[in-house]
Image (cartoon, rainbow, N blue to C red; front, top):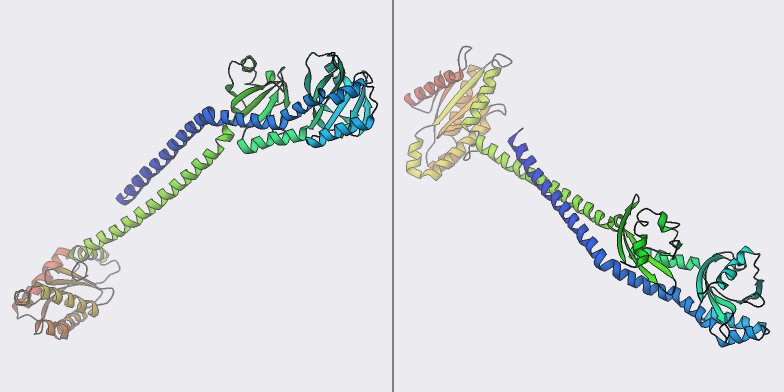
Length: 477
């Protein structure tokens, strides 16, 4: 694996590990904090809020029933023989409208007549199963009861009846009065708790039967038959504690209970932990996705930065910083590449070494800055004079090297002489140095038995001979 790839993989792995670990730690901490807040603050407060709302919606009808049972008019009307039908209808209608209740009713124990805001609608009968509630309630000692029942005379919908005994002045039962509340309205209330608080709210009677609940509740019947609840039933009814945790195959739950004395029902307020923590999971996945995206972006930036620096390093390693030509290292790599191809598709390799004449004098007379300008200008001339397939490099100091592929001896000499002339006659150099600049060139062709170093040695000697012969000339090795 390349070093760059290793570096990127390591950095990306570290970033990814930090992002994922951080997200998981934050999620676990949020879960712990949320559960603690839920148990210690949110759930108890919500139970109190729900209890207050239940008092407003459900206990008010109970108070209305109590008020009706103690009303002097209603007592006297029963004891006077139930004569004024319009009077009792008007009374029941006014109560119904005043308190916005689904229905009001009165049953006379003497005549068994069932009165309603519409008038006399039924006569209760022991032989009628629909009327069994009356005779059962009559035999109970409690002054009131809450009863869920269908009533064919009242649109045959499930209604919560709050029945209250009417006593005469000798404390003898003379009838039953009360109100009926549509269970649909109660279900809407329970559903609103689910929407508002994310809690399931339901009522359980003294026998453990779930009596009032929303249709969305996944529990039915007696809590003694429900996994998780049956193990804590005894503790609930003993009142030893009001907050519980239980689990079953469907989930894990937090439960708060409160006994409502007036309704004689146990209020259950519970929440499914998974459902409550669903939002936290969404936040966790969102944070994780953002972390992964940030990691990806940082990784891409790192790759981009490394590529830039790598290109710069490659350029620095293979390019002469002053002239922009290839350096000696790059030239040797190029030379070796074509040397291996010699006789395998390449017929000839020609090496040319160029040395600027009297360059030390240029530096001594004009300074190194001017000398550098002269080197740059020579490099520009060499680029212009060569083909794109030819290789030119700064060999070192004031020396340059050129490599030609498949160029004849005559042509290479012609190119060398042309270079000598171009440099000698260059107006930029003449203006810069106030005299013409000349170069000496050695040229050599690779023979079949010759090595790379052998060719370099041969051409270097030719360059030396050119210098020795008076400079500004081309010598072929």
